[in-house]
Image (cartoon, rainbow, N blue to C red):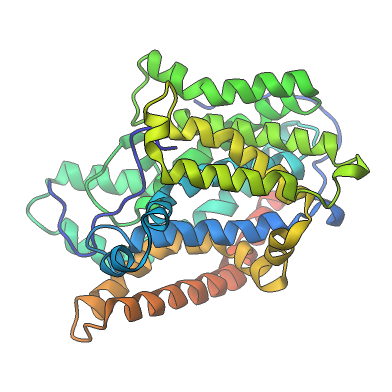
Amino acid sequence: MECGYNTEITPVLEAPSNVVIAAPVVRHERIPTPRQQDYLPALTGLRFWLAIWVILHHICGKGMMLETWMNASLPVFAVRIVHGGYLAAQTFFVLSGFVLTRTYAHARWDRKSLGRFFTARFARIYPVYLVSLIVVSPFIIEMLRRPAFSWAQRGQLLTDYFLVLQGWRGSLGVGWNTPAWSLSCEFFFYLWFPVLFVLLRNARWRAIAVALGAAILLPRVLDHAGVPWDWKPIYDLGDFVAGIAAARIFALIEMKRAWRGRGYWLYIPAALVGAWLIANPRFASETTGDLAMYLRPLNAMALVGFALGGGVIARAMSVRVFDFLGKASYSMYVLHVPILWWLGRYLVHGKLHLPRPLAASIYLTVVMVAAGFVYQWLEHPGSEWIRTWQKRLAR
């Protein structure tokens, strides 16, 4: 996901400087719900730590709460790891392909099941995203009232944000909720998932290797073909495909007793090599590839390892508190920048003017508490309500 863009945000309160595809129709039984034994808690806990990585990347950026503290307190290796937090989005994309493939492993697609699938995906993303826009709406109104914006620009910005088109537009010049560009990618992946799933649902080792190789090389092929880098969903589709391939690898090896509970042989080397690459970006830049290309198979390897379980790290990420925070991680990811607008104004730039490390601690606590509340009382029940409503309409 390096590929010439990142999720860096404009410092809080600064003014700006300026195909749906046809899926194959197979008429069989409805899509079943995931079986309880298919639940992989280490992957849920991993989502929380990925969200934290993104948040730290933002509050340690230029002019942000922890920039001075981090540069004065952490070694260069750790500073580079924190600044690489935008790469967590790439891991999220791989994880998305992995989890969807596991969830719909026994799916049979027809018109009704496709309707349920797309409704469930919309219900998973948009309600919390809409809440994030409501939270930051006073700042949106305040900014759009400035004469620097024409009516056409105001309309374009609102359209891009409410229709989640940020991932196709490049830089919009505003930082209302910058990480939301990745939601454009997710919606694009969901359109492709039924076709990709049908193609790879029974893939064996050779087909998996071909799919993973294509996923690794896809951005290079697109760049060579002249596809604009602003079209992030197309470039990041390779990560989603890598996740589907990783799920197939896991399905083939989980039946072998020798691998059960020994996933640390995969996720530890993948994490160490990935950390070294992030901390030494010159290695990727001086080769024919880029950092995202090298991280893509490592992400797939790490996810297979965490899914297999075993080891202190996987067990720690499976405990109840991280399991809950992992479930609330999407709300953390989507809400952390809107919350940053408010707390940045009152804790850092307002009358309180707290020491920045203290303000950052309060901010992280508020984000986690708010995300847990939103998940418990809005995200989960709202998703259930939308899916139930869709089923009633279908009847």
